[in-house]
Image 1 (cartoon, rainbow, N blue to C red):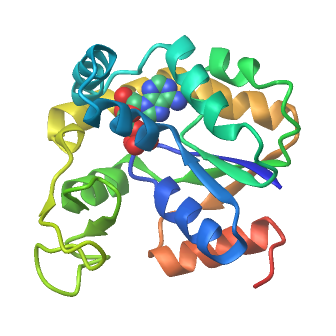
Image 2: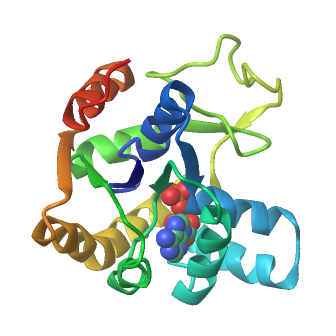
Amino acid sequence: MKLIILGPPGSGKGTIAGRLEKEFKFKQISAGELLREEVAKGTTIGKDIQKIMEKGGLVPNNLVNEIVRLEIQGKKHYILDGFPRTLEQAKSINDLPITKVLYAEVPLKVVVERLSGRRVCAKGIHNYHLKYIPPRKAGVCDVDKTPLRRRKDDAPLSVQRRFQVYQKQTLPVIRYYKRKRILVTVDARGEPHRVYQLVKKALHLHG
Ligand code: AMP
């Protein structure tokens, strides 16, 4: 199974992909995560990427395409999380036999509330929400015990910019896959467990 998961920032793409990976062993390939890893290396290119990400812009296609391609290599079952985000990126993977594209649909109002309460561990891997997915101990990651913090690009101005970018660049990608008849839309407004059940039903996955 080769899946793509798309949706606005804060739609829960990463959470859904993480659950599918855990239950069905599809490898989660998160473009944002791979880029954050590049930033963490502190390379010159990582520093350039960081500036773009903090402002909520998109990293150049050729760079993201290359990073994601490398990660896909040799894998049979995977979920592309947050990739492709532009039509050019989508066309660059036309050679891949994508099974389905899952569209996690949520209105702007819900997104803003989710992102303002989102917290991530110091390693940038595990996500929480102050209200909806609280850690067992306040301010501390359940898994690696590092302090929780807010992602820089979850600051209100960056969120606004990310949403604009999403509407301009990613909505055309959603329409593109709809025309190809491989788009499956899921109402992603509910709490994580409920949304996940809808996702499994929509993808005909049982487990
Ligand atoms: P995410 O973790 O999916 O919210 O992505 C965080 C940030 O990483 C985005 O706001 C972009 O700056 C960058 N990014 C993630 N995926 C892509 C992509 N497919 N193309 C370009 N930039 C991306």
